[in-house]
Amino acid sequence: MTRLVQSVETWDLSDIGGAWAEAQEPQPLPSLPGYRIEAELGKGAMSHVYRAFDARRELRCALKVGRSSEPNEVRRVVVEAELQGQLCHPAIPRVSGRGCLADGRPYLIQTLVPGAQNLDEAAQNAPWRRRLRWLAQAAEALAAAHDRCVIHGDVKPANLLVDEGGRLFVIDWGVSRLTACTPCERSAPSRTPSQSSHMQECQRCVEGTLAYMPSEQLRGRPVPASDVYALGVVLYEILCSRHPLAHVLDDADRTIQAILDGRLRPVPEDLPAPCRVLLERSLDLEPSARPTSAQLARELRRAAG
Image (cartoon, rainbow, N blue to C red; front, side, top):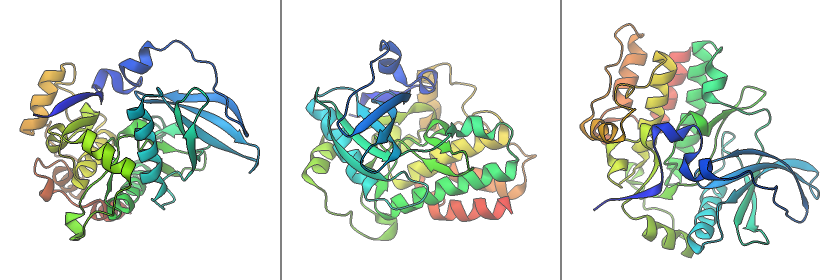
């Protein structure tokens, strides 16, 4: 039986970081030797993120701090740092360190995205071709992760940041996990003890944001194609100015049933044919019918011209 865990965010919670984040009182800035913590950048269901200054390297960075010192939370951040740290792509922030604060909460240090806006904000006044190029960059980053057998698991506009120079970054790998690379006919890389323990704990758990989940992820069996579906939902929003599940998103039970049945709003007929076909394929109920992330990136580049 699939286990629905706390890290699932419903549509109503997705923009404010989940029930845990909403319930928190304002927190004092943490302290970390060698770093000057300057400001809180945001908070989510599992962490707070701060802008910090690394005195040794003399540069600004992002400090992500877990919600508690519980062993499972420490292991989660360790696994996030390990998986994200092995990914080398210009659209994925680089992890430069990890550890625990004095109070035991885990943290990781990563590249700061300067002047960041989430994709929803950045896309408001952007030409549609630029929006497609941003999504192509996201698909290319996901392809790099999938090539390393890593699933992101929570692709949504809030986790797609555009910096002040117009570059897109895929952030928040907190629910990412290793999988067998069956599309590549390769076995998953060997897992560290932390990853093995975490994967066993997450077996058949549901993690992510409900409004962007495909049916297989909702059943606790995410695959690389699950990230493609989620990016397809984002693409639908970008092209159609509405969510493909807008008719049921006010009710979690109806949303879950619509996802399991594949009952999304039809792709509008007035979209350019290449975009319409790409959307239909990306949102297919069957994971094997969806394009790979690399194929999606190429098609988005082609559609953007």
